[in-house]
Length: 250
Image 1: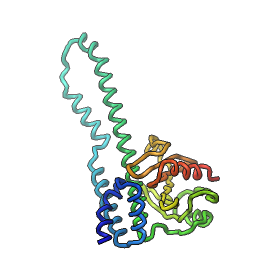
Image 2: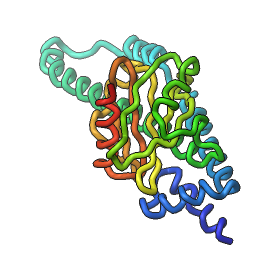
Image 3: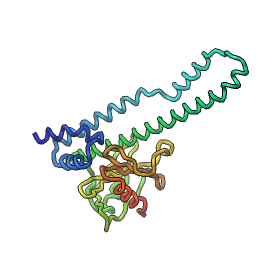
Image 4: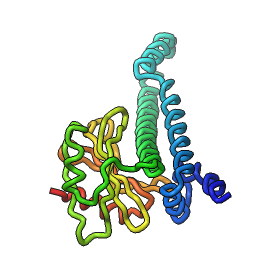
């Protein structure tokens, strides 16, 4: 019966809709209950499969251009030059406004999809029976473990005198690109740090300050050609503190 009450909260937990105290309690339960952890992982995988299937039918830029050209060719040329001169500025303003709105909405949707995928990776990792492949609190053990497993290197901060503890790491993938996922513990919370090679235009519009995704907080930045993401169900101040340590790591 106890597990049934926990499993009723899995969907809001995966979607980041569970209040922080309940999310923390459920995360602790998932680390101890293999059955609930497997159920959570299955739901995360199903959610990601549905998201991928939905993207499959998004119209390409080429298709949109063909439709635009087709509509342009079918328009009738009507009116007199005076009407064209009067109407042209208003039309340009309208078109520009629509283009700006379309661009903003598209970039916002792109950011939300990316952050959603990262929070899914974070949740599925914590729900796994083996959250990390290399278990160590020593950065000099964790960092060398990634050599030969990912196509880049990175530095980890010294945590002595801070409230953070390194748990370990694993290799993960984002859009089929390999990267590092590091797990840090802060009090009773786990925080994921994702490191990938920066993909330029795909991540250029991401916010540099912490962003709230329901019960999760995400911060992202670039350094030395790498893109960092810090994800956790803690406050923005805690995310910023860990992010600063990573930025300052020599």
